[in-house]
Length: 253
Image 1 (tube, rainbow, N blue to C red):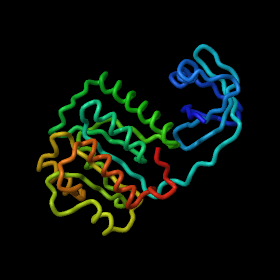
Image 2 (image 1 turned 90 degrees about the horizontal axis):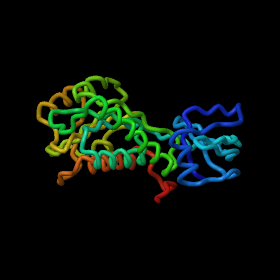
Image 3 (image 1 turned 60 degrees about the vertical axis):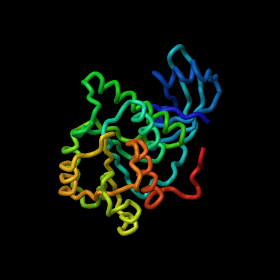
């Protein structure tokens, strides 16, 4: 069944009106009809099987049939701090890390960040990134949307994380002593991981020193220098394999 996001679902009402982009998708793109089944998601874990009751010009009225039990949550909460990079790579990165199960995305500016966004551009980008997250969640069957935070300077992101139960990791192409797999296998499982991936030009030595002082583990992903979007996807994949919810029940599409 097709999945659609509705911000607020009150099952006791029995009916929900779908408007906006989701309604346009149902009416104009999919051309769904009265009586067809669909699944409603609120992005916070609620999931309901529903039936289309009536279609209007810009609105779809659906009847809530029953709730669907969600799968068990992941063992860990993964947050990704990602330097702003060019549009297409950033879109790809957001799609893939959402699919891989991150809980939060923290875009940031650093000394070598090339992308600079004005206020109106940033608002448009945030809306665009959120739509990518929604579309990806529907595609992969994910029930909860990652939290999308507004971009901040790297220094602010680093200094604001002081939780002792959080494993803090920063990927640096010049690190030659610690790799991610060895780090994860040398530690006990922690409930939360904050990972940071830099811009196309990498981090400065000053930024690396600042991260070390804040308790970050500086790690390598191998001998090759990876593009920022490749590094982020590889990083989250390895964490999910070692500590997370990758298992034999995972469906590959």
